[in-house]
Length: 266
Ligand SMILES: [Zn+2]
Image: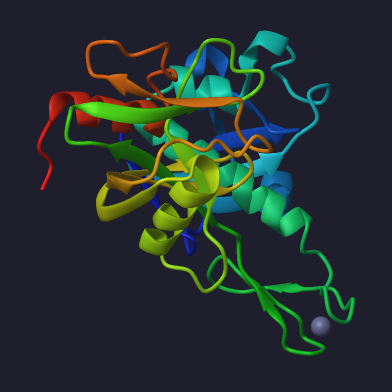
């Protein structure tokens, strides 16, 4: 199963489409599958085409649980359940569908002059009154694995995490590069100076619209000085004495696994 995103994807009434029905960030997925239906005039009117699954158009639509044919509550999955249980193509399509609907619903009027917005041919919208344009928001955040030369990594814990530790993380600020953000977050959150910022991977994280970007960095100087507004604890762990880690679907866990599997990452 392959999802191909296409903002210009066209659908017409009477053809078969995949429907991603959304209600309060829950998605109708009977047995974990995106249901197919014949596109009605109503769906054609209010749905947002977002692309194709195996060549068949995919339409996103807000739907009341009560008005749906599929009222069984277990068929409605949270986004976290979708990430944990569904195949990659479904995850991609659902994340895009939810965020396209949210963008349209929160941009019905111009934020500058309150004129009703018009949809552009791509994913954005434009005000016919003042020309203001808006596009779906993606918020970059970095995940930073700090490593030293003795096969130890610096992991931190937040209140409410129980025994779990993870890498430090933070949002990129305006005017800042991803590399600068990694260095700043390491200094602010745990008081250490780092260098050699190396990219490992990225992951869309729809809570609400982050793009997580994972890096490994090398410790240069400083002992741990935890920012207690952000963290409950932070400490060094050897590769053979790791604590409870984040779940496998999280990019933070994949980043720690990357460090375990690849001791020397240039
Ligand atoms: Zn305007």
